[in-house]
Length: 213
Ligand code: SF4
Image (cartoon, rainbow, N blue to C red):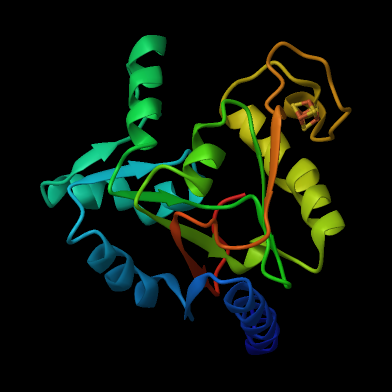
């Protein structure tokens, strides 16, 4: 990206940050990952149990392994080798952790979080359960409004996610959503968080970088 694109994305993030603040969220904005990482690691210092929603953004940041190395109890349901029951238990524990990290499939410039989930552990924990939630999102997740956010999830997030998870869905083969009725369909729960949920402290961490899908 050249300086003009970086500048443009920063304008969009500034606008979204204002929207999130209007909607009752607290917000941090960083120019790159190197700037954001110390902040994110500091947020976990007072937490003992830290949960993680399934997210390529978080994987790219390596947050779970960094917190595990610092002695925290990390709740990662996507760890290799877990049985279905073990995954289910961890997803339940995520709902009661001290701090829950997640990304978002899209956010709008008006300060809304838009997500589509298959199981619901991620979107439930974003709204209620953990004491604190931190949503980490790259500038590539920014969209002008709710319609474009929902479109982004279907066009940009779901197909590569379905393929990454080796699901037998049309989008994992063609790259396009056909509103399928596949048993592997990942689009089962759609959420729009319009305001900071009443009983949860949700912090939005925006980073001027490409992160996740
Ligand atoms: S509805 Fe089916 S085809 Fe469309 S994005 Fe979701 S899983 Fe893929």
